[in-house]
Length: 206
Image 1 (cartoon, one colour):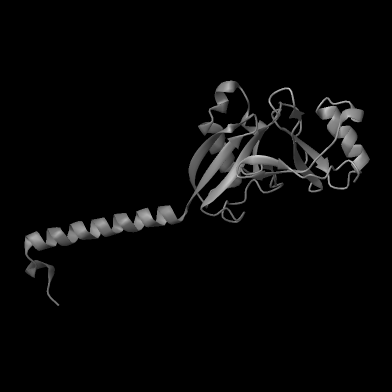
Image 2 (cartoon, rainbow, N blue to C red):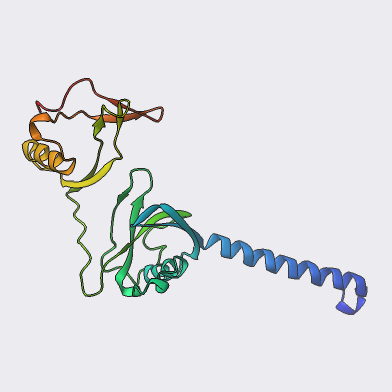
């Protein structure tokens, strides 16, 4: 080994620069490793999404405050305690878990890794958030419009209980889509190559 005095000044400067670069890269890697991206949708406008980079060690409450700030909701006069984050499927458009009692839990402890889709739900001051019912499922209803070149009206998303009787479901659908019950017939639809395709068998006899 040699003493620092024996190292040429130019080499010492080079070593110091390399050390600074190494420390900087190590810190960048640590930050990147501890950072998650949240894609936050607005319950009132699901076509708009905000991407937020935040540490996994931050709490759900802190993430909510960050989303509130990013969406500039303070400018609307809506208090922070009138919004909450809940899980969300951008594919189905269905809100999920509301994380009850976990406001102070870290994102990492909630199993938020790398990328997470959430939706910001709001309520009027003085009211309560609706409870998340695990027994509910979301259905997307399409009304067939033969007067518009065999097309469908814009879809209507509804939540129903899994054990709802089919007779009650038919009444519910007819009411939501404004169709006389005697003129309603239902088919199961699915997407094939971005096109809606119906089952040739009517669901009316279920």
